[in-house]
Amino acid sequence: MNLLSKFVRDLPLFFAIALLTIFLLSIIALYLPPPEETISEFREAGKELKEMINISSFTIRAIMIFLNNARVNTMLAVPFLSIIMYPTMVIATAWTLRIALLEISNNTAALQESLYQAIIVLLISPHTYLEMLSYSITFTCSNKLMIALLRDLRKRKRIAEDIILYYVLAIAISFSLLFTAAFVESYLISISE
Image (tube, rainbow, N blue to C red):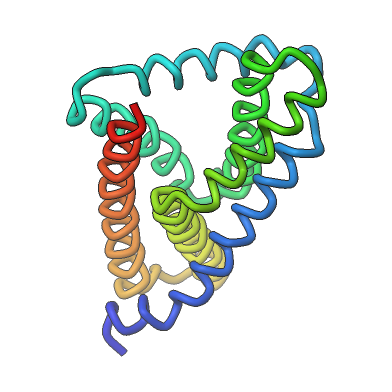
């Protein structure tokens, strides 16, 4: 089976993980506040995000968004590290969203309403699905590579070349999706200004 058809066969798994991630991110943002001692860290992340969004140039903003997302995707691409990074990324993103909205909401009721609105915007934004699909591809393929490494190390044999090539193809597709998502997000920010 060639690599591309194997990738296409794995698409339902990638989509399922992406949708599960969006669902978990929404639930965490709505119902699980961050610990008090971490709020200042997430406030800083929110400020950086706001500064990135306020960049006036469409292309520079898209590149900044891509570089930020590519940093996360690169960490997810590392076998063994991805198991820790994926849930951490989901929780951190949800809490950053919550803290950013807390900054503009003056009470709990306003915060809850803002969170519901933000989640709706998140769910109707095409870049959300592109980013989460990208992350799920990277996460899944990183774990497949990790399992292959463990299996082959235990058997004391070299890892199969097709596994490495599949991993490289999947990561390339993942970064391409992230690049596209960054320009879609920058465009949506531009038309909403």
